Image 1 (cartoon, rainbow, N blue to C red):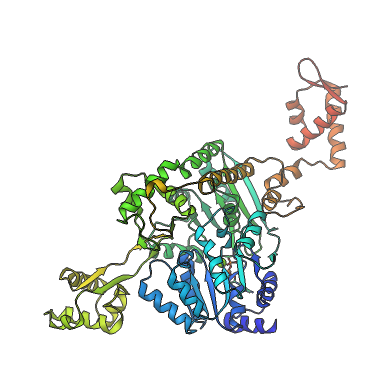
Image 2: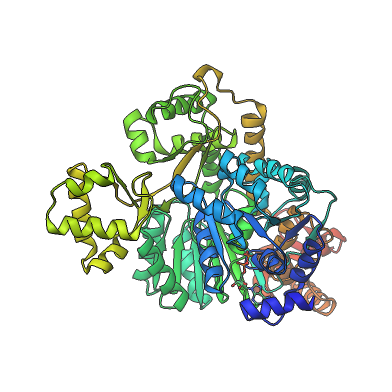
Amino acid sequence: MQKYLDILKQYWGYDEFRSLQGDIIRSIASGKDTLGLMPTGGGKSLTFQVPTMAMEGLCIVVTPLIALMKDQVENLKKRGIAAAAIYSGMSHNSILMTLENSVFGAYKFLYVSPERLSTPIFIEKMKQATVCMIAVDESHCISQWGYDFRPSYLRIADIRELIPDVPVLALTATATPEVVDDIQKQLLFKKPNVFQKSFHRTNLAYVVRTVENKDENLLKILNNVPGTSVVYVRNRKRTKEVADFLNQNGIPAENFHAGLKNETKDAKQSRWMSGDTRVIVSTNAFGMGIDKAEVRTVVHMDLPDSLEAYFQEAGRAGRDEQKAYAVLLYNNGDAVKMRKRVSDSFPGKEMVVKVYEALGNYLQMGVGSGLDKVFAFDIADFCTKFKLPILISYNCLKILQQAGYIELTDEQDSSSRVLFTVGKDDLYKLKQNAEQEKLIHILLRSYTGLFTDLAPISEETIGKRLNWDRKKVYDQLVLLAKESIIQFIPRKKTPYLTFIREREATERVYLGKEAYDNRLERYISRIKSVLDYAQEENTCRCRMLLTYFGEKEIKPCGCCDICLKQKETQVSNDDFESIRGSIVQLLTLEPLTVNSVIRKLTVSEPKALQVIRFMMDNGQLEENELMRLKLK
Ligand code: ADP
Ligand code: MG
């Protein structure tokens, strides 16, 4: 173990492993397929990064979140560790170059998004590379039973068969017992091997409040519990409304969602990290990869889609082990909204097929073609052109993804691309003005492959070299494109869509039980679990959540709203006798209504009620014909 501690110290500067990290590292380092379950922020990355540094060869890391992938690569590079990433949206050339470098042993880590795994070029190159480990982050994505199934994850098994002696380390923050089994099965574990610590967090109090006015209640919570907070809402518009409302009431808040510009997001995030903004009001886009220990409250204004998602988001509170609250605001309207969510999420099968057909036409792809083709995909444009409703269409695409037809990646900034459309020799024959000549010159000096493929370039870098501002570089590139000297694709933010199978003839698009009906059923059952959680009145919240994740014999936490309510109504023996004494005294004078008895006693209503109920059940009290209590 000393070897790993030394690596931990040398590259990360930490002195010791957290409890489960050591166990997982030992297991994977001895060549055993391993599944590690650790809560978000628990430190999963180090469990594959540290042992890889002690091994010969390359670690392939599969993860679906491209933004996080880029962060991790940057992070490793900062520590002097060679790493690279492959994902949809990169040019063919840079993918090829990255893969070739991997074969030469240029990197210790190669991050790959799942839809890239099955491409022939990736398979070819991985046969040649020396691979020491396959790490599968977010491994619950491989299970149909999970809440975030991605069929392209199933291709990891193919990679395994290609390099059978390489061990797999699967990681996830949430998995129900059936998902835990399924992950190991789908990843072809040689033997079951799971490391899991209880997910119980003693400092985190779960609370559900049934309230009519959620905004007012949020304000009350934030006024009662000082400190940093994350407030989750369902839609982007609401993020702004709630943040405005908080600001109007003197609580510094900002909104956040995936549709904001990256610069804006970064700025908002860092103001919240530094404490300038107390509250961030966000869709579920906020939180991944964010590591702030002292969050005091996480408030959900709307019901999440699953307890898995809820547990992850709520778990962002109190990482510093100090007291924190996870509050869910609920009212009866939510149950109806949940039903609507089901029908929005599962449009009829005909609709899904219609969207598939429109998609093929939109991307101008013939039946039988398109395998592994990647497109920058603008859903708004698609929906406008084909007169489709946007939310429903988006959900149809998700179903098509689940059914294994396509894969959608999250939005990402693509860099600008340039391809020279005239040959090198002709280029010098063309007459250009001095500015353009300079620009061409710098382009050719700064980048390779500009004559063969649309190559990524950076306006900033070019600008620095020429001493121009970005705008000028951009304008000149546009001019060159107008003169048909280059093809220029300005950078933009976009999700990518990959065809995992060639385009199917419309009448052959098949959404069978597995692809649709069973998923719908599981979606409903997940939603039901969320509703049960919100509506529960007697079981400890913590126990409900942990039981859902397969933990057994959980003692009541003692700090959720239900435990507190029960504590409040629990009457000690001494109290009981003195309350009973007072009731007897009151009722010897005259019969009284229940309410007057409660009013005349000096204890809380639940306590008084408990004693009254006991005395009635045990024949010490009865009601007269006017429903007044009297002694028996
Ligand atoms: P996860 O993937 O489980 O959500 P990460 O791997 O992103 O968590 O780690 C979360 C944070 O914890 C990171 O900032 C990481 O540097 C830190 N961390 C992980 N292991 C240790 C350790 N042994 N000692 C101190 N900090 C650690
Ligand atoms: Mg992680």
